[in-house]
Image (cartoon, rainbow, N blue to C red):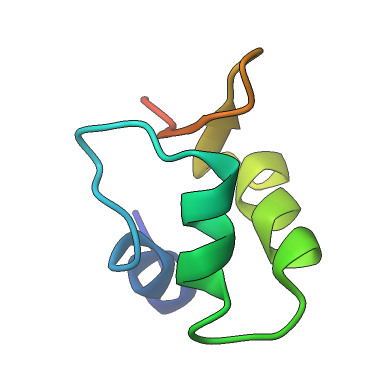
Length: 61
């Protein structure tokens, strides 16, 4: 079950495609200045996964 925080994050990104690190930064910068920290939290929290090429995908499961 997604919390309100998770649902808010999901509205910034399409769930059906990968996002480049630049796209993630641009989306996150619309809500906060600390993009690098915000980019890591969804990965460590299991909402997104980061691929070897540096792109981010919606975590499955």
